[in-house]
Amino acid sequence: MIGCRFMWKSEDLQGFFPVRSECQSDVPRTRFKSRVGKTLSRRRWHAAFTKDGHLDMERVLRRIQRGGIHPSIKGEVWEFLLGGYDPDSTFDERTKLRNHRREQYYAWKEECQKMVPLIGSGKFVTMAIVAEDGQPLEESSADNQEWLVKTAVTDKRVLQWMLVLSQIGLDVIRTDRYLCFYESESNQARLWDVLAIYTWLNPDIGYVQGMNDICSPMIILLEDEADAFWCFERAMRRLRENFRTTATSMGVQTQLGMLSQVIKTVDPRLHQHLEDLDGGEYLFAIRMLMVLFRREFSFLDALYLWEVTRPHGHFVMMWAMEYNPNNFSSYEKPENGTKQDPRLLKQYGKFERKYIKSGQNEQHHNTLAVFVVASVLETKNKRLLKEAKGLDDVVQILGGIAGNLDARKACKEALKIHEKFLRKANKQ
Image (cartoon, rainbow, N blue to C red):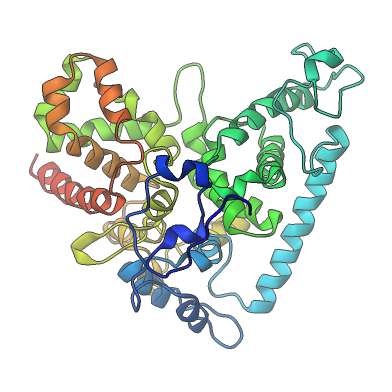
């Protein structure tokens, strides 16, 4: 790509996601380095499969715990960690399922294309294509979109979907704009297509700003658009409640409540200070929780943050830490339920394993994210206590961390806070 500088040294992982030359000075470099002999490499990944394709997930998780996932196989591994494929399936079974999913995705895409021909064209919209009452817009109001709604839209679901397509487009052009990958309009259009189709299929959630930040890595990591869609779809099964907002509640309200309880327990002085500033509901942390810190860390560090925490000197994937071998069957055959088999305990992530052993079955996905936010607040403890005289100051102080945090240290601190919280909570 013009203007892109590729660096393929093993110790410089930034080379896998090159930055536009004009943005080099503004984009912080990743602090993560590939650890030879510890990071899950392509060779180690392939060696974890039997001849017919069964995956030794316990072996993979152990390897990931030591050094994370190499960027070259990140997408493939994510498909398993997010419950897209059953580790106990064969190569042939997965090929059959992958082909079926691709056919399904492109059928949905064709359905959307009939309503909005720009989908799949390599183009996308950033301006409204229809008025809120469903009436066509004047041509001057849809300049350079190469396609216009010709007749009134009367179907409420179609209208609701069409009205949000321009907002998706506006978010797409802001998404990871410093990466060479998105110099290509066709790559931006792939992101728009996936988000548009997901929105059409999920009218109960619709599209909410921030979904673009979750979807972007899937578009970059997985070559086939359909595979990227299904990876995003699986991720959203874990995250969708973050984006659900009603007139009386926000999707992340439960996590904000937990964050409040954590800080109150581990750092009562800071919690009281935030309470005095009328910030005890921790609304300033919404973005961090909703999009899993994509705005607070560099691109690579954010991906590692999704994956890596470091308890007791060992790397543990955030998703691997919450990995449940029953995810696949619960997604594909929800009517069968998800009985916990004690023989599979070693295949669970460490964080998930604690809940299984304790008999706790409540939904706790993304609990780790709460402790990472807590670790971020603790890094700014002194400044918050000394300088924050109002909520605007809190937002400004936390805003200054964007792109300047060490994700590895944040993860390490998050696990310490988790242990501290459990100790103190048990004493109460």
